[in-house]
Length: 372
Image 1: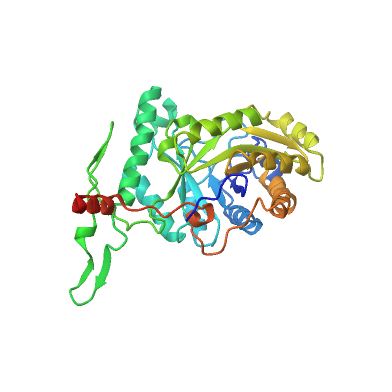
Image 2: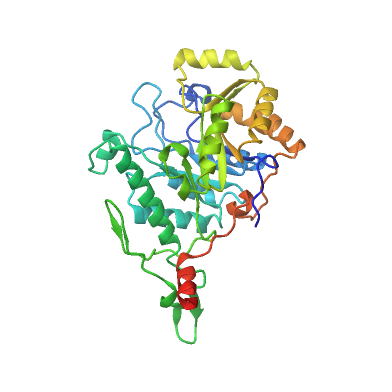
């Protein structure tokens, strides 16, 4: 399958954690800040995003509550949220954040493979690398890690997950009633991986994911872009995003997505909405582009980004307000420009994104040994 070049299509993802990117977004939804996740609201949000034509939805997460102040909110673990939604959706990709520093690598790989099976090939993984002393203490660790150790840990977990996903060949399950064999043991492999802080023998307890490899997504700042399928790049302005996108492409990353926060004109002008939200809890600066204003202005920005990146992950300030505006005004405008195409029901996420089905490293190694 050929990759769709930048400038011809802009893949669109949306972050759907909590009530939105603005810290006071819960005040608009009316949900108390410490309330347990509103599951019906989550279900309705993702159904709306899927109907609108987003290719992918992501779910932020942390081993700690997202804050300790008056606007802190509780939430269910991201992988559980994605699993719940897997059978309620049929075309949108599901990408929970799982942290390499606080999740046992074998369990992480198994959870994501299971999600890919449950969703019939629509799983992705946003690589998390929480590194505070408080977060690491939740697993009995100490920290924070030094930069080189953190980068090494993230790299090791990505590598062992990919090894484990390949530990079952696609044809390992044979279901032979005449011999009573369910699988061919010669097609299931130990991975025998040793990293800087852990080792895994394998194989995985779950057959190979339908996609072969779950789509791996990570921020360019983690230093592992050579191991991922999608690199997320931020920046203070379009020039910053362009420069960072060019740098990560040197690592041959298949796709690059820009990070963009949005607060749009709705029933009230965007500037008035922002001022009201900021009076409750100021929206501090982040390492993402931020658009506060009209849908026309955002559409223009996305057209410009289409020349330098393959996709955009949008972070609506308030999901209940900004997501409908995106769905009703922005995505149709991009579709009219032929910059956006909605995913097809039943398609895998790799097919939606134009990513090829990966070969299996163990099959490749056996073939190389045979021909040598």
